[in-house]
Image (cartoon, rainbow, N blue to C red):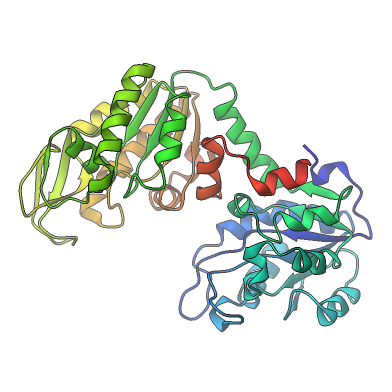
Amino acid sequence: MNNISDVSLKGKKVLIRVDFNVPLDKHFNITDDSRIQAALPTIKKVIASGGRAIIMSHLGRPKNGFEEKFSLKHILMRLSNLLKVKVGFSAECIGGKTLNDISKMEDGGVLVLENLRFYSQEKTGDNEFAKQLAKLGDVYVNDAFGTAHRAHASTFAIANYFPKNKYFGLLLSTEINNLEIALKNPKRPFTAIIGGAKITGKIDVITSLLDKVDNLIIGGGMAYTFAKAMGGCIGDSLVENDKVALAKSLITKAKAKGVQLLLPSDSINANEFNNNAIIQHSEITNIPDGFMGLDIGSDSITRFSKVILDSKTIIWNGPMGVFEMDNFLNGTKKIGEAICKATKKGAFSLVGGGDSVAAVKKFGFTKKVSYISTGGGAMLEYLEGKKLPGVIAIQD
């Protein structure tokens, strides 16, 4: 794997694609700088080697050109403080003004370009836009795992203009290496925990994991579609009626492949989607009308935790319930605790996906799991066995 540790960067203009798509509050203050922190080793490596770090990223989903709330100038102060160097800013990301800003850089300097997605050509993977970006640097480094599954101009097309000078950043290398630990030669038993609201979007990864894992645990909102598939009464719980037949077929496939598919047996229910709702506990297949399932119950937690504690490799993507509300966080927290205990016993644990990562941080588990992935969608596609455009572009 070509990474930046393999090349001399002194005096070089190093174009680094990072993922600085961080959450901002209404005053443009960063509320979680994890993605910036994750990119620091690569940026520090470049500037310590005497290279000029030219940072490009997207932020948010701007609709039509410039939008103040999505300007990357809002991350400058935090990045400067973390790097302990003055960080420059270019108000555009291609063209004469940007080239001029870069020409003023000194070796060891850092310059952030304006949001790539202010240009519609970024998402379409436009070659001419990629060519304009490529003019800015001598070396191209992709360190944005969070967008590696997108064939965008800055993650895919641009690599064509650096046939001999394209590299993986340290974060992207680490992400791939950790996914390979889980997928290529996992220690067994191998358990995957898939949660979240819907089966839609996770069908392919569930199907793919059935060929890889010993145990597959299903939780979150999608569990109620499985409960309905088993003939259960699920009250007013979230359900994808058009996926009931699919859920049935996944249950059958798991059995045929010898995979232990663990579905919740009980549910914590509420009469409305509200932390202060009336709460009751029932079997997941016997939820009363007027109630919706918002978390897994104690029996499910016990069963799932036992399997997790006996596992040697664990992948977790998606919460067990509505952990953002105090009355429905127990399932997610207890499953997280079981993963931490298994990790302490020597298991390899990989956590990915925005909600799972948010839960790990909320409950203070960050340093108690083996690895936290910075890319939910990219991680899922990698687990499915798909080739990620941002990875292929560097390997070719």
